Picture 1 (tube, rainbow, N blue to C red):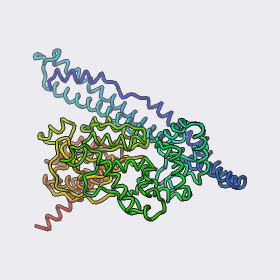
Picture 2: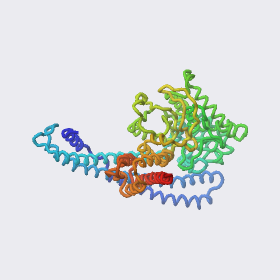
Picture 3: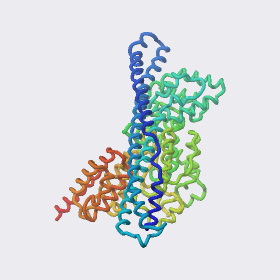
Picture 4: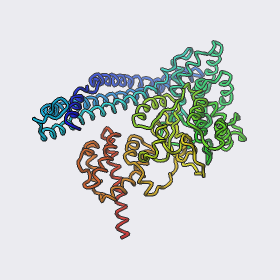
Length: 627
């Protein structure tokens, strides 16, 4: 960059405003959240006292049972409210702190930029070098100061933006859990709403709530659309239920859009078992929509997994499973065939056969031109999602390109919001593992928004599971070449399948892995992405630095630098490890710095460097033993 261009760039950078926001106001709001949480502590103690001492002595019979349900729901809800307020307080405090730091960092950039601008004015005339007053030393000094100042401004903007996105994401997630307030309909009392939204899968909140935010909103809307006669009949149906879980399932059926007669027929089949949460959940929720538990299970029924096997039915299979997640009457039909308790129908293999039949039904909706190729086009995937899923959630699916980082960042907030509401998001993935950017020969695919490789639905993230991907490799088949815009098979991942060990990779395949991409995706995302980072990613990194002559102790030392000084500090070092590996390590650290923003993230980066060092040590030891 010439002196004139640099002068104008410095001038424009000085005009940029500091990150917007008032840390003081955020701190006041956090304090208000804290105060509200403290008040809930007192209320919680009073409710617990009523539940344990007063209520059993005052009311008996059905009235006592209903009252006990309300008190239990209140006792369950108050700690959750307090915890939500505490998490909101922590998010606001963290945002205030980071925003204050970002604004200070922005201010630090002004002095070097002003000095650089003054020096550049001395040696330029308008946008050209001043040949009379030109001074190489001034130019070099101006360039260095401009670089420092611009870095401060950019770092401040990135810091503030990242903190704002993180806070918005978490606060939106907390807001989505305020379910009772979403019941804006006629007829249900506050106590009824509280008891219904308190119902959990298997009677245990570890497995998630029965109702999602979208269920609650739509149930209220459908109840308001009922005639007075149907609304009264539905209230009587709710009043005759045996358990909060039964009531919640009936409300969920209403949210899906089923009629009163359909819901009544469904209740007739489950009412006998309504006081058995496990029986209900197994047959009505074979796919867990909202599980905060770290324990995961395969999709299926009574030990028989729902998977497509060797067939090219990725889109259809994942769509049918997604519908089972949102439409409980459909799921109940899949698991029991409409005959709960009858071993002829209510068994794992029969359920798998029905799932296969539904998968083939959706798959057979393809056009006649598929006679010459397997799979489904993108527009067909969107159409079946709108027909099978959106019709039961009120959503409308559209295709969104995620080819660039900016596109993914722009879409992420909306995706997470919809997931928090309880709406499944089908995600198409091209190719296999995360690899380097495409070669020039792949540009014709990219121009059409289509990366080279296969297209297949990845899965459905849900509340508490935003970052959890579950892998299941599919059997390979001999297949004919597909058109550029065509999706053939699903080679790498399936919808919510049980975790399994991915196939091993050769050194040449590992060499194609982009460690920087793995760091950006694996550091912020617990689950398979992080497992890949600490597995194949660590092996790739160790192989790379081994070829450059780095010894394990250098990476251990670098990990200690990251742990003590931070990832950004380490990325700015001239030679993180000395020699040819310096540029490689700086690239990794720069990628890691984009994904982490606190000391916990720095510790994770240090752990990864230690993992790379451990793999490197094994390579060195094995090589020395062989020689």
